[in-house]
Amino acid sequence: MGQPVREYLLTLCVTAAVTYLLTGPVRKFAIVAGAMPEIRARDVHREPTPRLGGIAMFGGLCAGLLVAAHLSNLGKVFELHSEPRALLSGAGLIWILGVLDDKWGVDALVKLGGQMIAAGVMVLQGLTILWIPVPGVGTVGLTPMQGTLLTVALVVITINAVNFVDGLDGLASGMVCIAAAAFFLYAYRLWFGHNVEAAAPATLFAAILMGMCLGFLPHNMHPARIFMGDSGSMLIGLVLAAGAISITGQVDPDVLNAFTGGSERAIVHATVPVYIPLLLPLTVIAVPVADLLLAIVRRTWNGQSPFAADRGHLHHRLLEIGHSHSRAVLIMYFWSGLIAFGTVAYSVHSASTWILLLIVALSAAGLVLLLLPRFKPRAPRWAEAFVPPRYRRRKVTAAEPAAAGAQPGAEAVPGAAEAMETGEPGEPGEAAEAGEAGEQREPVPAGVHGATAIGDRSRFAHARRISSNR
Image (cartoon, rainbow, N blue to C red; front, side, top):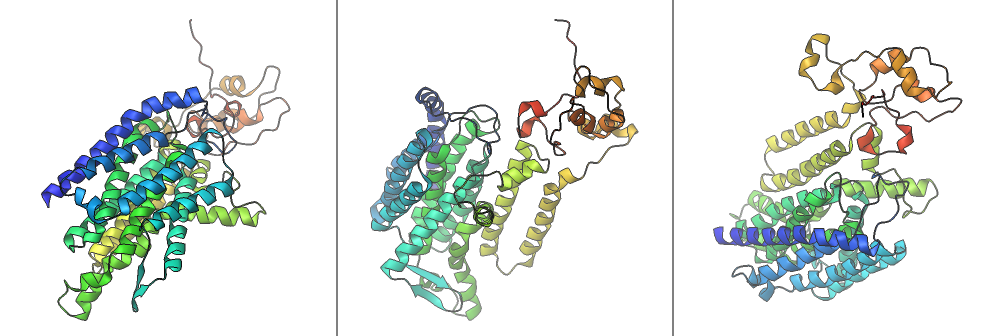
């Protein structure tokens, strides 16, 4: 068992290294090629940033598959299964489509058609769902048409879910990396724990997907030097869906029953890992899928196209309630990891109640972190030296708000000192917002600061003017 682990680790490291080393040259190529679109209204970054990061990620995918094909244990996956070739074919098509969209822009319906074609190519090469295990019923075989439609639907949903969540620096790559790690643990246990050889391709796909995301993350963390673009988000979404389809469509649930003791309870516990693939592709990306469904409902309710872009995604909401860019990303990481690893833990110990209690406790902690900007605790005077500056009270003289918020010739606003004293350090108070001469401005939400990059730079008035001797 140790040797396959080393081969998986080698494949992961090679994929991550190639992706990391290619991202720098790809960034320069994207700048030269002009793949730096103008900042849109829904974007949260403040400077034009090159895209086409999916080129480096596709190079890492090819390198990982090439190395795995020449290893002693993983090489058998290419000899016994056609899934790696199917993945490479579908990934190549979706990658080309993404590159064209990053450079010139592609219509939403054209992209949807391209995603369906890429999924259909994988189906033609054997990567499809053949049966579905239904609790209480057993294994339900699917006709070729049913299997094709279900496979294409799962691929399209996963691709667009990952694409929708790609709105903050490092968000999509980090969440998919967490999902791939949970999926790897699940697939590896199914392969070696239950001796199911059909789970080997999915285990390989998860290891390569982790390497692609880990290699790209150092360049994509806030502030990002390059974006993966649709060429990267659609690519990692397809790889994630391919691993889930490989397990669900190729693993026969009757294989696990051979390892039970014959009792009904043992059979139920043994078949729990087989039922998990029905939910795991959605649970590991539960947050992106929820964002996708909410976006479709919201846009349809407002009379807009489901493909119309807006600023109503979950990561936009986190910024609006006061979270910084980095904190919003970490919160999304937390919920993705909780759902993904919680599902895998339940598949291992489905009869343990402590797992359910732990998930509930962590969910409560996540809700507290989610609503933290709504609360503005202030440390007492004697403890201000031991807490971060954002929790301290500071006194502002009457002259400072007038200098910070009012234009020359504008009247000072009464109560400005009190407003500045209760505000967050580095944030404009109400006096600064109302101090413009005859101009009505939209108030800045509580907790908004420069890191969130919401709105124009002119909206953020400085709390004080710092003089310089230069």
